Image (cartoon, rainbow, N blue to C red; front, side, top):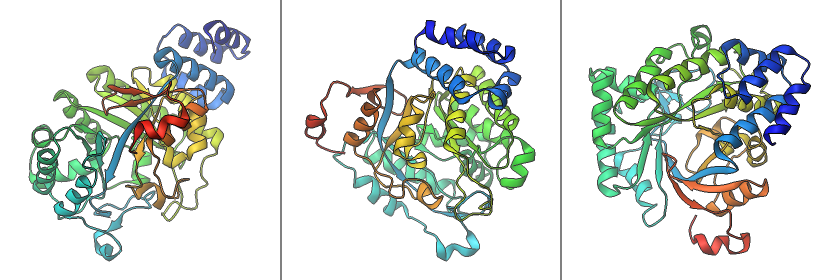
Length: 390
């Protein structure tokens, strides 16, 4: 939607509060905490969506990013028992889980030798015997084998446990991890920051201040990171805005976040399975409000395996400009949580087609959003031959 058209839309809104929010956005002014809550509570999906799409196109035009990546999940055994988790198994029930050795994980890395992947994403449960030395050795071994592979690894939940067991400060732990080969942090483990919600869904793991402190320490080392929010369970709208506000404040301070990723709560096989999942309308509104509130985050991402391919396409009209990566069926987290994609893998050709089908411009990126290749002018009939590999 053009600027004159979006202005006409804002002018037509009868609610003075929503109209004032619209003018702030058109004037590229920051919206307030109260504005964010009002968008959730009072604004229509069409209004928030149009505003979010306008912001998205002002920032990125039609560019839509993806990368060639794969996942390694060292273990699903975990000392924590989060109510929403469908993935991990308590250490006492570890016969139901898996534990990968460094050799086994290197076998996964080596299976991508000769393939143009740019990132390995490493996250998993918090295993009491997989300590900091174990993971530093893993980082060094990956870098020695493939120095150009970007390692995005470990949530603050994992890192906090490692650092405490190793008796090192957050700053020292992050420095040692970075020196061993850790390039950036994923956004997981954030869930909802507010203590009232955190107490009910993940009381025993690192709190909001601890999560933010680890990302701040990474940023101070020159590393970048992502951030997430788990929505659609027991939280209220203001809890979501409180969460985003804390992230926005840290981003003002450090500028180290690349991407904000709203994560839809899935109710399969967990202690919150009685809670009804959010609708697709609610999902799209979450993305739209995220784009409007997180004004200092360059990118908003939708994980296509969690939403499903068609809904991921739809999100590109509600503020989203990144759909993650090829993944290559290398993660069990999505499927075990009841995601739309039970075997999450897409070739680069598939991702390019998905983006082009909704008239967006597919751009392969590196983890830090360096543009590797623009696929917008490659015809579908020649795409697979041009790529050669996934």
